[in-house]
Image 1 (cartoon, rainbow, N blue to C red):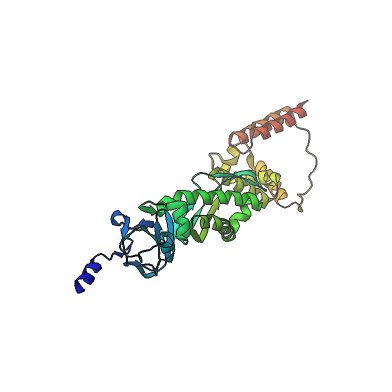
Image 2 (image 1 turned 90 degrees about the vertical axis):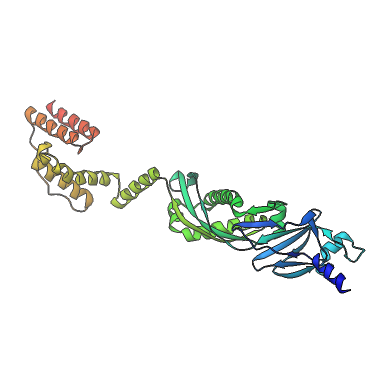
Length: 336
């Protein structure tokens, strides 16, 4: 009798998974000819789950604990097999282990700018990136919808699908919310919470639970950001006319640093005072410059001299070619 007990113990399997490699979500336990001995011991560690599959059908799910695989611990398998021999012989089934640990700091981002319709700026291209974390919550769904009968399935293999799904949901969220880019960029935490709620059912369909989603940055491509910065500057200064006058006034110190200064550019001290008055008037609409008498009629020599000075300002970049042509037309009228 003691010999029989000893021989029986030699056939009892000890089934467990130590997660030798990081990032493995699902692992098929290697059994010889898929045969598991009656009375085998199954150890499922904390942060793990196990699935017993018999002839392609999910028979039983095991959470953390120590199990003896017999008719008392596997009623679903017993029902599938309709055992009539008290489960005395080995049975051919597969054991799959699943890691339920959190997959932390998974990075997401837009590989290329995505095009969206912004209610304030119209059609714009947008970049965004951040991190998220998840864990495997439903081994049945994951087995049926994702991993199947493969020997191993890793988190890296899920990354492409999850990232693409996340970016697609983000694009839809922008379109559905109607919130402008500026408001969205200023409320990244709220944006992340809304995006997470939108993705929860998507992750659940894979048997996964989305734990956190963080939006770290929302931005425009460099060329569009420059346009936005210019627009913000104009809004701060008031309007385009004031912004243009501000740029002209700001260019005076730069012109003074050139060889010959403003005098060399043909402007002279009087031109500097005139531009300063224009700048002061544009920045302080309520303050009017002192009234001056109407200028005396200019001679042909004075008109030509003024044209030369204006041409020098255009050459130095203080006046644009359009502004020069406009002043030139006004001066030529005086000759007529």
